[in-house]
Amino acid sequence: MKIFQDKGKTLLPRVDSIFLISRLLTVVATGWIFFFQEISQNDYYLLSILTVTFAAQMLIFWYLVKNGKYDLKKPYLSIVIFDLIFVSILIQLSGGYYSDFYFLYYLTVAFSAYMLTLPVTMILTGIVSITYIYLVTPDIHPSHIIPLLLRVGFAWFLVLAISFVSDYIRRSERRLLSLFDTLNLRTSELEKSQANLEMIYENSRVLAGILDVDGVIETTINITGGLMAYPASAVLLIGPGGNFIYRGRNIAGQSNFHLKAVDTNRQELIQATVKKGETITISDLSGRADYLPLKTSSRCVMLAPMVAHGKPVGALIAESPLAGIFTQKDEKLLTVVARSAAMAIENALLHHKMEELTITDELTGIYNYRYFADKLKEEQRRAARYSLPLSLIMLDVDWFKKFNDTYGHEVGNIVLKGITEVVKKCIRDVDIFCRYGGEEFVIILPQTPQVEVARIGERIRQQIEESTFGGGGNIPELKVTVSVGVTSFPENGKSHDEILSVVDQALYRAKGAGKNLVCVI
Image (cartoon, rainbow, N blue to C red):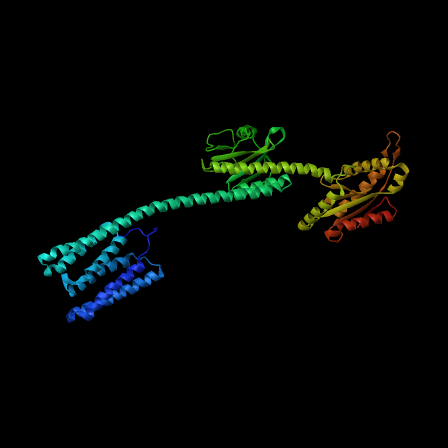
């Protein structure tokens, strides 16, 4: 049988201190008997032992209350039982029926009604009633019956009243605590939603600032796979012919950015998502043939269309191994990320187009000095970091000023365009060919050692020397030569920051040595 009321989670006050203070009444009663009541020697010893025991109990209980680290149920029960014995002896020693110490019983049953369950309190009150009647029976007179019944009846009334009130308060507080729990849950959900919105806003802002498509894809995958912690997610973009291509995937925390085409027989669901322009959630993928999951264990999937300015770009996918796990909140969050990613990709593509217009030379169509300067820094850092060779070729058209003065700038421009075409045929696609300025050109050759770049420089010089330019209309066929400077990192022994200065020196040595030469430093 349950003895104590539940004190785990309650708004009711603790009565430990009040309980200790109430014990002072028992101390006063004991002192009164010691000093003002004549008792036998045996009763004196008995009362002394009980008093010492009572004091020890109170000290232990006070220590437990002060430390607050112990369960006080057993101490409470032991004190209540001891009180029954102690108060009964006090009543017997101080006059039985005529003793006023029966009031101490009321303290015992009152605290019992508050701390103990109703059945246990009723049993305890019955024991108190029987004990008190037994103690006062020798002194009972017919005129004492009504006062005796009032004394016992008040004890029962006190027990029932306190039990009823405390039970009502406890039931009320359980409802109130239940409301608090619900409120805390709703507050927690609201805070989580707020945190998600802030996270999405911040990452949308980050996405908007990324100006290359690969960076947008990587950041989007980091959001879905990292921040949103989807077990599997992917970014699909519309490729040539309307087919879909995986541009980024995150499966079990591992990101993969290798291109992968979607099986044309399993992209019906993706096509429906993009066509409708609405997020689609499939609670259970079992038995479906219109979609191929990223993971074989996936059971639930969300597909959010990526649309920018009304134009479909692709789709954002999130999967989970738990069927029906995704809610409307998840759909909204994924939709927001998908839209932000679509806008970021559109901005990156526009930026790329604008960048192409600003990094190419208008006359020759090759990269200009601005692009060369940025790309050289990038390649220099890569070469230094991974201990890779890096070479530069700089070439200058010999006697070009005199050539322009003789034939005019229009013919000079034709020659520059012709030289550009010749050089393109002599270098690789990965080499970066730029117009350095005027009649000077420069070529960045990644992962090319000095012995190889020297041969490339000589081939360029020879091919230009053997070529003719012009020859159409009133323009005669013309021949020109170039001086070439070549250097390589790390063969030249210079730091990669000095490589441009070194290749410039090599070019001027070639010009100073008679032109139409290749000089290697």
